[in-house]
Length: 167
Image (cartoon, rainbow, N blue to C red; front, side):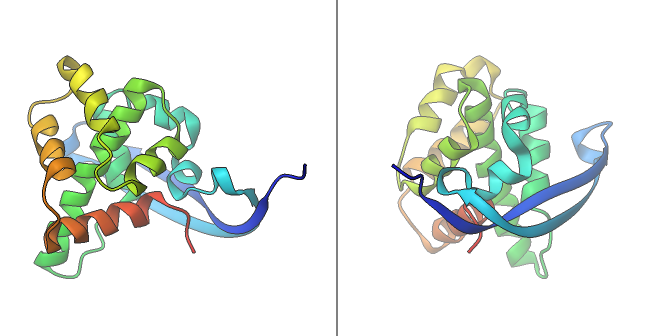
């Protein structure tokens, strides 16, 4: 049986970072896109940006936070959009940490993000609570279990856009 293939926009990440602490990171990203034949299963933006090695590195909360900040860059034009982007980065770093701790792939992260109210990533973080920084678990639980509001849906949209394949 022939494999299903599709033309999907892919991303390549080129970055330089000087990291002495998360407060004074200097991270410049250049995301260049290209077209190419790609398996549908691997056509996630997060997988193309980070790749399997960096997803595994996300077992370290510092790396999960750094990569979430790289993937959802601060392009806000207003205080309101900055609020949503920052909260989306908090959510994405929790997903990345859960993936790193569980040995999951970028495609699994995409599945978690796509499934409304999927608590798999939350359970992973709860099982590894001693490795989760203070405040991350409670905030992520509120996001996963919270009632959908306009704020919740906007954050969810930003995270989905960061993770899923580009159209």
